[in-house]
Structure formats: C-alpha cells, structure tokens
Image (cartoon, rainbow, N blue to C red):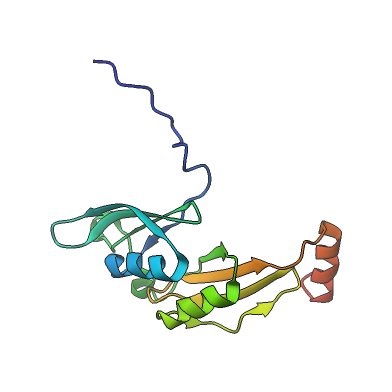
Length: 156
C-alpha cells in the first residue's frame, strides 16, 4: 500500500508556533479561551490526567501547550523560576483584553500605555507564569519615523 504524499510543513503552520509548558494545562486552555479568545482544536490527555499535547488557535494562529513532563524534559515557568520568553498578541481593543486577562487571574507588569513605536501595549504574566505583551497598533510609522522616535526615547 502506498502512503499519500505528506507536506513537510503543514499548510496551517507556516511560521513559528509557540509551545507552552503549563502546570495545569486544562486550566490554561480554559484561561486562554476566556482571556484571549483562543479556540481549542486538539487535546491528547494521558491516563494520569496530564495533557500530553494540546493545540489552540488565537486569531487563527497556532498555540501549542502541554503539562510538564519529566519524560520529555519539559518544565513550566513555575518549575524553572520564570521564563525569559514573551508572547506578543495584537488585539482590536488592548485595554479591554488586558483588563479581562487580569480579571481572570493574570498579573499586570505595568499599565497599558502608548509606546513610541506606534502601539498601545500592556504586559502581564498569566496565571501559569508566561509573559504576554498585549497590543493594538495606534499609529502607522515609516521606518525613518520609528528610528527617530527610538533615538528620542533613548533606544538608539
């Protein structure tokens, strides 16, 4: 029997796909659904209740997650004492999305504010230890304008 041809890169996974390890994957799925409008598309649960793999979509983009797994050397931010990685999520209403995420259990790292690069942004840490930068684009800047503002802000 001949196997059908398979695309090495699945059609709906064209870029980088974040893969989060979270202490309570079922709770994380519920949280991301409520806070960010994520839609669960796949869940593989182990007999012991851990989630070995789950997939969600936020604004059509993939997000994968799983429970910690010693077998796979996968540890959560709480097991590691934090994470240096942040996730950037553009939304239509940054203030409303940010407030909702905090109301559902995230910790704000500061207020939502207008940034020199043309975004209104707020950063938070979700209940599972992952940092999210929630933003709405409020200005369209040319590269020249962006560099000028970066210099004024002390970044160049």
